[in-house]
Image 1 (cartoon, rainbow, N blue to C red):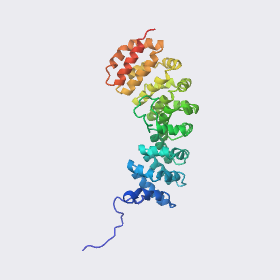
Image 2 (image 1 turned 90 degrees about the horizontal axis):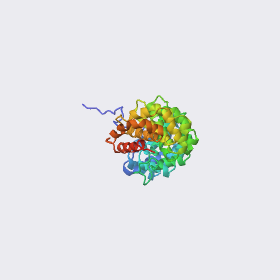
Image 3 (image 1 turned 45 degrees about the vertical axis):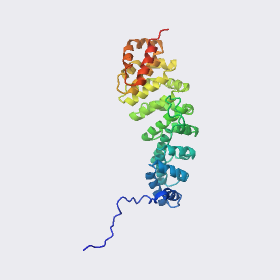
Image 4 (image 1 turned 90 degrees about the vertical axis):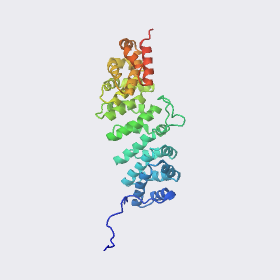
Length: 355
């Protein structure tokens, strides 16, 4: 005979740490109310629920429309560690969507997040930098199809630069944990494409020089990519030469990681635009390792190596050394990549140029 018995266990798929989500269009308004509650547990459960819901861009749009961003801004100053951690997690998820990044700019979330740069909780800081990284990828209107580094205006990066955060981000590059350094480098690479002035005034080149020597290949690759952005303005090119970064970049051409090699060649391409940069690279014997990169499978590596060699061919000494390697460039005119083929043609014209 059956007996009535109440189970001691919770129903399946029920998370006791997450707020119950109301039905339909009432779900997000109810959670927004709970975010403003005085009860700590209520706020924490609401944040847990939002972490799930914010993966859907439609929910992000509604959340912004009903004022959730303002509620989250207030929670960034909460004294409870878990509240701040989950708040930054919600914001970092929202920042993965264009509508969320637009909302960040409209509601001045950059300024609110900046107060957490020195937060005692590493997870909180990591979430904040992840949000900045995503934000820096937001294209400005009308710029999405432009490919030139000087033309890829990025609204999110512009917002971070305009907020005056760049000196603080550069300073943090020396003091943060390694996993956060990687996020910082991603953000700086995008922001310095827009304007490297403040970073150059904040000693970013010596800091990046140190990161090029990191044992972590991801840090080396991202530091070299950030140097590409730094080297676009003339002052950046001069500082890269003044701080003896070029010999390190030449050394990284022999790295075992393709991305490190590609970004090192890209940084050399910009740094060797100036005469001083060209001769510093020639003195560091950059031509031989660059020629070796032309045979690698990565089209990015080949392309950046060709462009760097083209810069060196503008110097008489470099042109003389490269004349014997014209057949190699001829072979690259048949490369599968259209960009590589075009770069090879330009390189041949420069190498074979006669005064």
